[in-house]
Length: 352
Image (tube, rainbow, N blue to C red; front, side, top):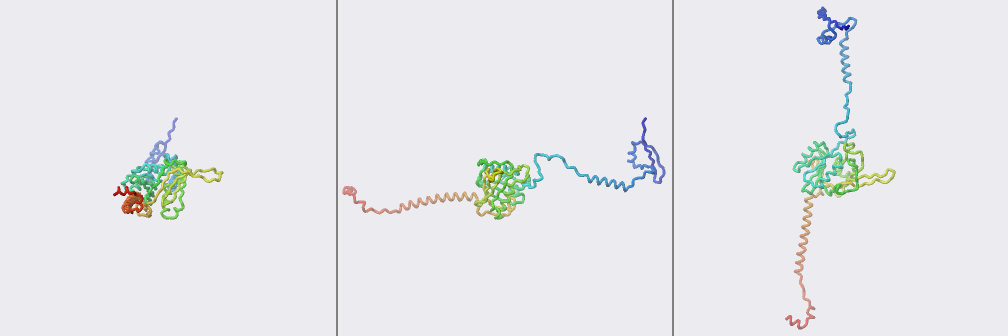
């Protein structure tokens, strides 16, 4: 036998007079609440005060606010390895202008291999303004260092080294370039390893050398815990100052047995190249000149001097020939008194 549960609802007016009385099934109880129908409860069951109801609502809100936010679970998308220790976000953009020679292209590729934190871009048109185009490219590539190779007349190679986007920047003349494939040295370090940068003590003496050292350090030093670097230090890059130029060499550190007291050895890897500073600019690829090398001679001027020297050599030789010819013409040969002593009479008659 099934029992039905009902609820007795009594509706009263404001003057406490009975207006309506009905029986509703239990399922219609919620609908009655929505119609703002006041339920009459027993006298022995006191009604909850309004202040306490507000307090309970505030407590529920505070408990909801105190719930900590959930953190996403899982690895980041992509194959890039992130690390909290990677705080030095140095990135170097290495690219060149159009018309570079094969030797400059191989040198640029060697630098990209040595610097795991480097990025590359397409060749830049030589007609574009470097001070406007290069900082914009570095901003799109998210790079704060730039190494730009510029070739002129298919024989003169220049290297721009600068901080982006506000400078400073330095223009070098690249000389004595020898790539790794050309040298074929015995050294062989791990690809992507972090180098030890070794600077000569003279770089701390002059102001422009200190600036050159800082730019070279920020461009060639691989940041710690970089995603593309290896946690090993097995090579060293050396920077020497000689004859007004920066001589750059790359060596492998050959570690000896820890039990032996012998020092570690160095085996050269390559590449080799020399940088002659031309001018230091305050801005990125332009701006006010901070330093100018007075001993610098442009390649065009140097070739002109060689041609003038060769032409002077030819002129000197031609003048010597003329002087010798004039000297021969001005020589007077005197008659020898003894020349006629052995002449016979027949020979004398024959001469007459």
